[in-house]
View 1 (cartoon, helix red, strand yellow):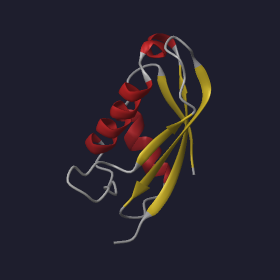
View 2 (spheres, helix red, strand yellow):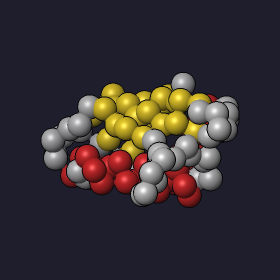
View 3 (cartoon, helix red, strand yellow):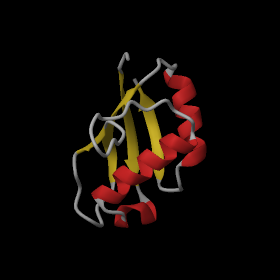
Length: 99
């Protein structure tokens, strides 16, 4: 199966500054699944989406330049991904760029 790496740049502001790093990762995993993105999964006993968020911030810190790396199983245009994820993410998480 082919892997298509993707980078998403986003902002975490407002009440979302109180979400922990692990909860933010789970939020992106769930939003990606609800958006219908074909996520590439790890191999093993308990597969999960190949995804990471950098940098890890302390609780209560806002940022306008966070990055997440996602690996997709199919190639999709960045504009479609941005539109689909925007519908699924809560207020305080804003996608600025998909590349």
